[in-house]
Length: 247
Image (cartoon, rainbow, N blue to C red; front, top):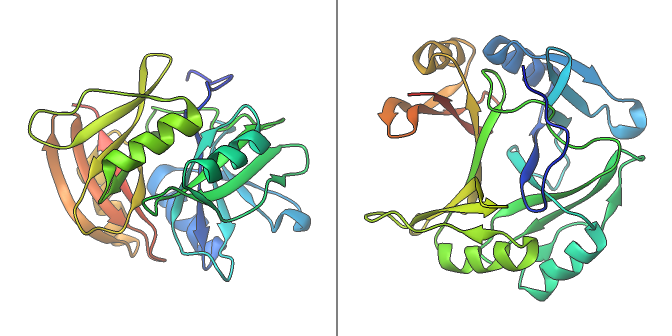
């Protein structure tokens, strides 16, 4: 299983989910993806890393009082302080100051000008997800928003990302780092902005059935797309994510 060693600026590099009941969340995602876990000490709020073959792939944490139950995508920053400043300069709204995470890295939670919530991660000891694009790990993140054009301007300005060409019949573009597609931004009129997380699975239908039998809500039944077979799931505590198996 290939292991990531570094991420370029602006690339989605980490994901985590807030849970009303972290133990129940761990049980659900272990049943779905076979995850094992490493829980941090009390001073981290017992922030828990999900592991595949002993390598970090995602995080789980107890829900804070001012935080929704949701998956969050973190974009890699070379300098969190400069990124915090750039977020403000380009119309975003930091929800936190720069937080030093005990030498693991430095982070920010912010909203873009359209209301999409995202994280910023400046790596320390923790570079982000060690394994991606394999069954049971994260494969893609994309922002749906009523104002994709404004969101593209923001992420390009703050993170130096390039914007791909739009699809011919749908306002969808990729975002690129060093010429490589690393995420997507698209228009959904009148929708609440949302950075959706996709997980790679070997069999979308079988994994959807496991999610359903473990108390999740299937928001979109498995269907074929040009990028693979996809389903959208809401976990038992309310966090939404997608499954994707390769075509």
